[in-house]
Image (cartoon, rainbow, N blue to C red; front, top):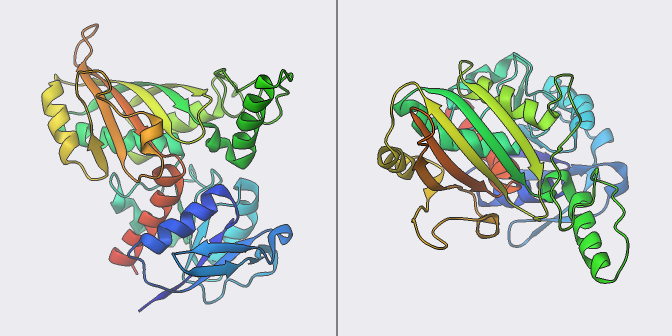
Length: 337
């Protein structure tokens, strides 16, 4: 039996990736509907190798009869239309930040906590975590299963595509303009992003952390283990696609780097490329278009007891957003509906 599936925010960078990932997935889709704002109605988006979908108006769309809704329209839009879809009987998998920390909404990474999906019936809504959180917990899960993690210190190097098409356009425009002797004018970002790094992603919170850092802390606790202590510094870098993270992990007991390397090599969704030689690691450039989480630079931290360092890279538009959303749908179909 096939399903009727709505892709909400279909014209955005993540929405287009969701359509690609859905076409590649095991989810049997008899009918796929592309939805976006009124301004995008009538535009065409690709689905699979040979199908084109005409975008319909989200505000006027009746979700009755839709089995699964894959949402990525922005948090404010999801706040309005995800509950409307859920009330109509559509199971919503939402890629925005709107519902992630609500206690009756599962926050799911299929390789990490698929059992949480059982809670979807409370609201008919499932939340997709933040991109930087997803790749980190996929790498931490097999290690946490070996030896409980006590504390995580993570510094991120996040690409401009995390801020959407506007972020990518700003990096391109500023880079081109600098070579033409034009003064860069920040718009999407707080400072010039070309040839620079910016230690702020999202707004500042009362404790002086940014909201992106707050998300990584609290989402990791909800997904992996509330006992884990997490501190994060999130930085925007002049890379178009692909997030990287330098992660320091402190365990309750000793864990050898070779044992960690073996566990990660066998873990679902993880590819280890870790050679102690020039170029023996993965950078964001190599992960673009890929679905895996790549782990490199696995090594002991000799400055403290029971700690390892990791370098973790993933395509934030694929595994960090669209692919994880579709993998949730695959697991939902396989196990629950």
